[in-house]
Image (cartoon, rainbow, N blue to C red; front, side, top):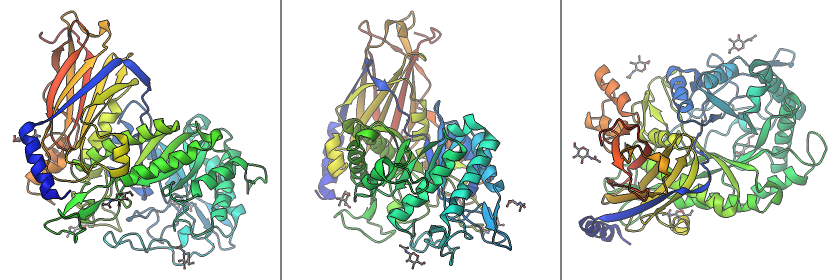
Length: 588
Ligand SMILES: *[C@@H]1O[C@H](CO)[C@@H](O)[C@H](O)[C@H]1NC(C)=O
Ligand SMILES: *[C@@H]1O[C@H](CO)[C@@H](O)[C@H](O)[C@H]1NC(C)=O
Ligand SMILES: *[C@@H]1O[C@H](CO)[C@@H](O)[C@H](O)[C@H]1NC(C)=O
Ligand SMILES: *[C@@H]1O[C@H](CO)[C@@H](O)[C@H](O)[C@H]1NC(C)=O
Ligand SMILES: *[C@@H]1O[C@H](CO)[C@@H](O)[C@H](O)[C@H]1NC(C)=O
């Protein structure tokens, strides 16, 4: 369908209204809610101890009742002399491993400690990626450093750090030294809660070696971790994709029955399975043709089906291994596009509402696909953090400058409020059916491209907290106008004890839209200042927090135990309704 037809259809739909009924049954438990969203990460380890980085870590640690984890590249990477520990785009360093004048290893975990101290101070635990190759250990180290160009993309970055070690014994010893150091410093109980995984995306040029070479790298590292801490949680392989070729299945086969390169025994312990999945946005015109960056007739078109097809393929591989069917799966990167530090018009979804709405649609579908395959999805990691001024990037980062980040210059972006909403969900997932939700098989094969957008719902009920949560999203792949959805939510099956003596419950409506929880809209309304006044800055920081649509309300529960709530939901907006036991103090 062409977009002119689409626009005409939308006008008709506006006139008629896009009516959506959502029915929620509090008594229909589907099992415990799995908070898959509470994993984050980035290429650049060193921002963890920069002021805004550590503040953002604390916000992530605070995001919900469940533990937050953080994954980063470059924990073992070597820094340029004079710039050790200074971040750059897609870059970071710790100098954990160097050699002395006689070529003997010298270990220094000071910077890694600083990074993890800041995680733990923010109530965040490491999802620890063991990599990349220190300069003094790489088989082919030169060139090692690079300058990354955000507009040119990631082609020039695969330098010496991506190479295999000169000596696998030394690689194993480095990992053993690191793991024993971490256990000494943080204690067995703490480190037992972390995840350990080796390298990043070994099936693409991040690893300049063979597949068998990666197994060897993996086995040596995992063996060293387990020698230091036999109860550590270990897994992998954090590969790019997971569906396209036989890589994931071959790796699982190696872990199940292969000869372990480090021990010579059969198999490699595997406590969790990790792979990545990314969408593929384009900048297109109304005929659907890709247009030049910044073209006036262009708009962003997301491709959620790309991402979901990868997930679906990888889940079917995992499901085909009976011994791994129940093994926790962490999608170690799960994003709408594939390069956080790149900028282009196709990535224009990152500042505004589209990032959160897309995340709602794609995270929910990943959970639905896991249920269909009978696999155990535990995490979907958002590869986005923040950038701030430093010796390498004194001026390169500005306000809302187009990177895939959660906060910009200390101002939270709207997408972070999607995460805050999911952080509030607790208890059991319960049945929630929306007449406006595009069916899973359609989203998987075609994305959300039709004339009606996707108005979906999910709900949880927390019996201990006596709270019911209904989350509603409104998403379309095309970043165009669509009519508001006229949403009616009907909740049934509330326990009799839930309402107060006046037959009321308290309803709080959290909202992300143009006027709520949206620092970007606020910044645009100020005229997009790159040098905001202190007053403007504080207003932007406030606008970045999760807000409610009005004050909490006291609502009536019918004799049958049902509650009805109606509201319009603009395109790309998110709503979270929280119903709590009325305390009797609200006026009836
Ligand atoms: C270890 O690394 C830190 C941070 O780079 C540095 O300040 C310190 O001097 C190093 N220690 C030794 C013994 O080289
Ligand atoms: C691996 O490294 C060599 C340089 O040592 C380079 O020529 C080659 O392109 C690299 N391979 C990949 C896949 O990046
Ligand atoms: C969206 O992704 C699917 C699956 O990868 C692909 O077949 C399709 O061509 C993509 N659509 C566009 C417009 O790029
Ligand atoms: C660039 O960054 C430096 C260091 O923070 C700052 O002093 C300077 O004013 C900046 N220059 C511009 C043009 O923004
Ligand atoms: C946002 O506020 C403006 C002005 O107050 C209003 O016209 C608009 O309808 C509001 N939009 C939403 C989504 O609430």
